[in-house]
Amino acid sequence: MAKLTKRQKALNEQLDAEKVYGLSEALATLRELSTKKFDETLEIAMNLGVDPRHADQMVRGMVSLPAGTGKDMRVAVFAKGDKAQEALDAGADKVGAEDLMEDMQAGNLNYDRVIASPDMMGVVGRLGKLLGPKGLMPNPKLGTVTPNVAQAVKDAKGGQVEFRVEKQGIIHSGLGKLSFTEDQLITNFKAFTDAIVKAKPSGSKGKYVRKVSLSTTMGPGLKVDLADVEGA
Image 1 (cartoon, rainbow, N blue to C red):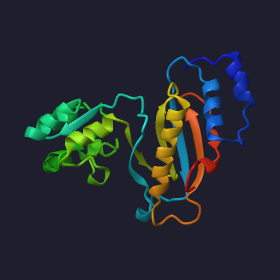
Image 2 (image 1 turned 45 degrees about the vertical axis):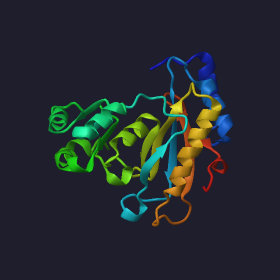
Image 3 (image 1 turned 30 degrees about the vertical axis):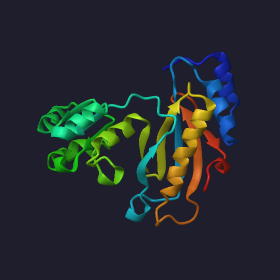
Image 4 (image 1 turned 60 degrees about the vertical axis):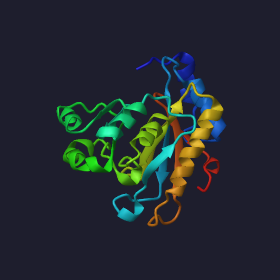
């Protein structure tokens, strides 16, 4: 863990845990507190008024961050023939069929996204116990089971992120790197929070977005004014 300077420790001690920050103020404060030993990720946590144990309160989907994620996404694609070549041309890191399945069964699962053409789901289905717990199982509702594998690869490489609410009703995601400009981070913040608001499930009753916090990889969490979240 990077060592905090005396100034950063002092700033940490001065933080009011109950203070609610405007979006720009939160970003500026997190930059000031950053150790700058490496390019930290800006992370968001949204507390939602849902209980994901109920099917009609699940919040899950995909959203493209306009400024990208700042992360090199590793993408594997299950496809054959022309589709396999299309995936490779689009920048997929690994493409295959039964051979890719066997490679994953051997423990090679260092991927951020797994995509499959519909005809390959018979093969992919045999990997459910491996891919499911890691959140990597291709899903037609998320656009990761698709005949257009090339576009799915481009979306993944271009800043598309998946979101899924956890048991406690919280959604976590990265919004880019701290080295991004303020405008880039604000644009990503708004794209992400707008997607969550639009994904409000039918079973959610009462207040939907209850709390939003921003932090960095090693920094404290700062509460963000819900006025900065459209539709909250």
